[in-house]
Length: 368
Ligand SMILES: *Cc1c(COP(=O)(O)O)cnc(C)c1O
Image (cartoon, rainbow, N blue to C red; front, side):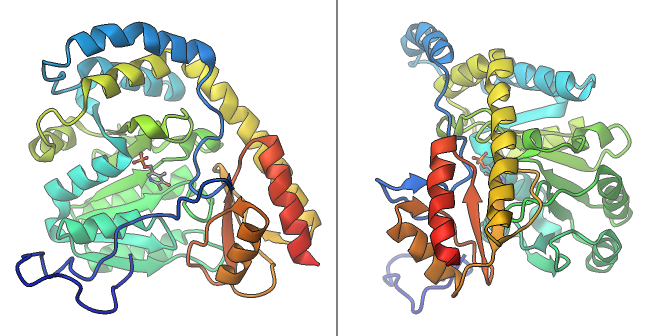
């Protein structure tokens, strides 16, 4: 989120004053480079998954004159079955909502529950305050520790003082990769409950982490909302499917602010097939975790400082010059990574082995 230098809007355009100086979210999309900048899964869908999707498509296309299932019941059923399987739970359709990416989930939550304001701990996912701004949700930020850990006592004090309706924790955190222990999430949920607020745990990278999911706390804390996505682990960023697990009362509230028929029939069908192949797709997560450990080790050998990561990316420092300059030095070597606006740091997404080696070769040059 950045401010435009001056007012660019024509007088006949009644843009809301509170968003007039915002810029659209977006990482640079530059072709012909090794793209390690948006935390996508580098593996294309396996052939068998694609052929199953193609098998289902004629039926879906033949019914495009009809609106999709407004409540995406089959997809939500498959998603909740996946979560129950992963976390050994017995959640049901009343505990899950799905939308076009977890970003839409976050927007639906803020539209429904944003009136009291929101709190986040930075550095974290910049889309949270951006959606807050566009939904008229008052946002406040508190700092993480210098090692990018959360500092649970400070965070609790912040919740108690600020009394936010919505408290955001991203774990594993983006852009730092650091995870918040489950025991700390329980304490934060208790603190949020004290001030009549909900704790939104953004678990976009959960499948890459060793920590238990916060869904295991739902029974104890009705005010936890766990936000997940198929964009990263399931290699489905282009299909746009995100979801959340929560108390049935939360889901009822979200149904008020969702748009009617928001999730297309095509999206629902593709998501179902991906979920039917979750074993195959999640096997690739294991390969990415192995690569994350290798790349982190190699970066450290080159003399870079690497923040311990539980996600599919690494935040590192130790290059000479400012982040923007070093980012450009990588571009010159054909590698697109991410300048996340953190002084002295850059973020690299774990790609395929060959891509990671190209990145490491460029990094080695920048240490000399
Ligand atoms: C990538 C990411 C998302 C995912 O967004 P989608 O809309 O599901 O693609 C959500 N939260 C965080 C922290 C992310 O890094």
